[in-house]
Image (cartoon, rainbow over all chains, first blue to last red; front, side, top):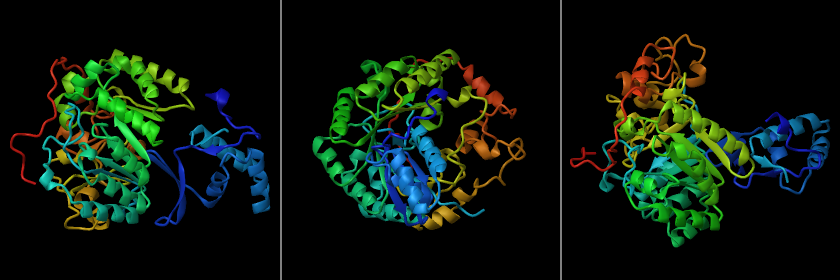
Length: 94
Length: 362
C-alpha cells in the first residue's frame, strides 16, 4: 500500500469515479458526494475541488484555478485532499 | 438524546421471493402481499425520508421486482433526490424492465450470487436461478448501471471465494460485496449447517486480501469476516437509530432488519405516523439510542464509541437481553455462548426460507 500511497502526480487528470455523483443536499445545506452504498458530506472547498475533477484539468490546473479563486497558496491542501479521495477510489487518475 | 439525521433507508418492498436461501435476512414470519404498502404510501415514505435527510435508498425485499410498481417507485425516489440501489436476485429483470429503470434514472443494481459452482448455487438458492442471474448481469452491464455483485459466504461456498470473485469480475461488476452469514432469523436457524471452520475463514481472509490488491482500480472488493471468529463485535451502523432505518413491507419502521426478532419491541407504522415522528420519537428507536442503556463492560469501555456495544439483535438472539454486550465481544463473560456455538457439530441439511403455513396476522 505504501508504494502507491500517492496515486496522483501533477500531470494526472483526475476524474470522479464513474459511479459517483456530486449533489447539493438541501436538507443539510451542504454539498455531498453520492456513490453506491455511500455518501460523503463535503464542505464548500471539497466540493470546489471535486467539481474540477472532470478529466479535463490536471492536478496542476486545479491547483492554479483554486489558488486564483482563493487568493492563497492551496497546493498542499488540494493535493492532500485529492490523494485521500484517490486512495478511497472516489476519483481516478486519468 | 436528540436524533441525528439518517443517511440510509432500506425499503423492504415485499417479502415475496423466488429464492429460498437459508440465510435470508427477512424475519421468520414472512408478510403476505395483502399486507404490503401501496404505491402511494411508498412514495410518501420516500419523500419524507429525503426531507428527513436520507441520501441512500435500498429498494429491497424479498424480490423487489415482484412489485409491479417498482419502476414508478424508483422514478419517484430519483425525483426527490435519493441515490437508489435495486437489491435483487436478478430473477424477473427483463430487458424492458431494465431499460425502463435506466430511463427513469435508477443508478445502481446489486445482484446476489450464491456460488461460482452452479449446482451448489442453485442448491443454496433452492431454485433454478443461475442462468437468469447471468442474463440479468449482462443487461445491467449493457445498460451501464453501477453494478455490484453481493455474495453471502458460509461453509459450502467459502473455499471458492477466489472463483466467486473472478466470476463477479467476469460478469462485469464494478463492486463485489462478500459478507459471511450473520446469524439472525433464518441464518440462526441454519447456523450449524452454514458455519465455516476457523481454517476456512483464515484462508478466505488471505485470498480476499490478495484479490483486493489484484483488482484494485478495476473492481472494488469489500469482505466482511464472520464476527463469531473476531475478538470484538461489528459496529451497529454507527449506533442504533443513528444513521439507518428499515421499513418492512407493511410499513413498520425499524432501526435494523434484525430488530423484529427482539420480542417486546414494538414498531410504529408509517400508516399511523410520519417518518419524522417515528425517527425522533418511536420507542423502538429511542430505546438503544446513545449509550445510557449500556451495561458493563460496555458502559466504561473506550470501544463503546467504536462498536456501540455491537449488535442489539445478536445480543437478544444469543443472550435473551438486547441490552447486553454483544456476546461476540471477548471482554464479556457472555463470550462463552459464541465459543460454544463455534463447537457445534455441523448439520448437513438446510432449512429453507418459505412462508409459514399459518402466518401471523399483520
